[in-house]
Length: 507
Ligand SMILES: [Zn+2]
Image 1 (cartoon, helix red, strand yellow):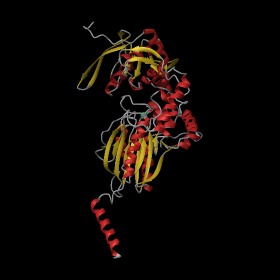
Image 2: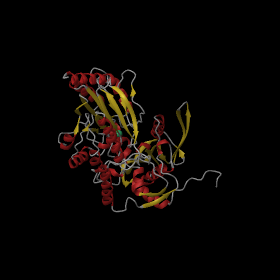
Image 3: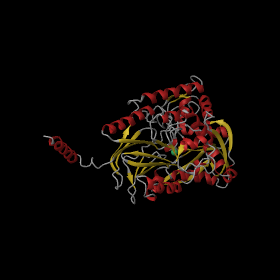
């Protein structure tokens, strides 16, 4: 009789092995990831999606489902969480860090929009928030006197999940157009840093995951260059990858969820020892704006809203300062009524024959109807300085005609659009390549050898001024001291409602 329980245990054990052949060997890990949330606290630019409290609820539901099946989770974000809406300024810039810290990430990469305020201000912010969530940036080589950066920004974390020792190493973009914003030498080569860290970490970890704020193009290069990597979780380029991509030479998967909290990445992997990381399931889970909200994050978002009203003055952000019949569409895909209105304002403030601005600087399209100060800021949500809560100023710079043409043509070749006022040209597309001609400035033909004064935003003005003294000497950038936000408000009051253009033949 005594043998019965033993036999039944053996039978049950055998049955379990037969029913779940893979489960008995698999080391499943649930990875949950987001990127480029850009302080879209309440919703994404698609009004049906996003919101930090909704993102958190989706993360928790994926984590709970995995836990119910006995699977551990690793929750990561690829960076650029603090800048992109008016919430950037809430509670003197601390709100995006406080909210992010409450989201429950195991680690968050530090993106360029998180350090564009400069090492000094970032050090101060981290000192006052003291987040528990590790911020990762292995190529962020700050001075040791920045004690808070030293305490909160790490090159990598080591975690033990699914019986596996995992290193998550973080990298931030080293593009020259951004890195001038921190002290010289602070952002070092991402490729060299990857070389140094990945092989070193592989020696005492079973798996190495790269949490990358480098962009999809750079991620693909690293997937080829770093065979010791197991997985790249991407950010920065806002690339929406429906499924993980694999480079031809290497099987390292790359994932990215687009931006602004539209989706959460749900990645179930098998980390069986001695085998390449295997993807068991991948899906982008839609974050619905009307979906469940995490109450703690929802509370923090509403606190941040109260702080904004307190800091700007009650009702100031909500005040209706104009009316528009056309939606405030960003000029990302070509000229728009509102894009031209901004460029025209920059041109007027700079007292220049023309203005030129990068369409990438624009934020979220806003609906037609009443225009509030908040919708003006969120349309162009740019700052280098938490202590200047009116955003970027209008700058002016000197530019030769040939360079104006080159900038517009090169941007078009890269699929981008330069937002302009006072500059016209004819564009023809042949076999997918742009051919530009008949450039005119202020109504007159643009002369290649002539140097013009051009109105630009602070991004271009201060950028060229700080990247190198050669550029400064060439462009002679100059700050007008007038915030773009206030200048557009004044223009709107002067011009009255923005009316929909009347189609020819219909009036
Ligand atoms: Zn970025």
